[in-house]
Figure 1: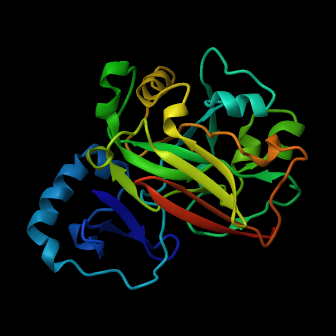
Figure 2: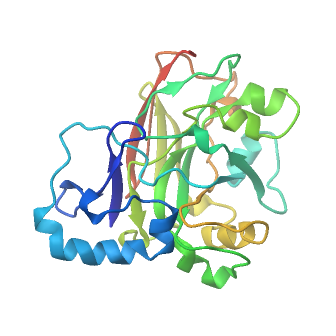
Length: 284
């Protein structure tokens, strides 16, 4: 399945992108795509419900806004420096264990919402990433069992204000958590619809110029290991997000460095997971 949510912010309705291309509203199922939905085997229940009701589901109005395909998660866990070539362009080495950091859930937004430049920031950067959504509670999960705890995969742009992240003391979370810094979606795609999550092309453009072009096969730490690893330090709840890191081509790694400014347009996508677009607007 491809789960979607559409509507105005905080008023999104759950839906599905059907195999025939129709986007239908499943509000009559009675549940949003949140922690309770995933924890109570909602994916299976929804699939069975759609088999019975699919022909009668109303379409979403044409052009309606995409929200994130899952409701706000309890946490967004990100993996840093997980592509060897991105680590090199950042002047760092792949660490002996994954680097973990958080994005505040208040940064979470729809895939095509405008990116707001933060006040006091002048080094806002882009990062196309493959993310996955936790499907059931995960604590001390063994790597061999990790995929059983994943609901599906999605596209994420892990925006970063490098001045906050690196030039000011403290943890990276300061540069990762500004409003609109986690556009997510457009779809949550279940595992059965992905041919091989270890071979997904990904790309990102700024004003039409390709900045990042890579493949999930280049991940240093693979997805089953990452879920298992993170679950050793915290309980992952259904609906939580783990974003697996970005390939090379970020603005910080260029010579001279390039950062976003008001009026820029960022486009990104991952094969089988769709694409998104964010227009950059000034701070408010």
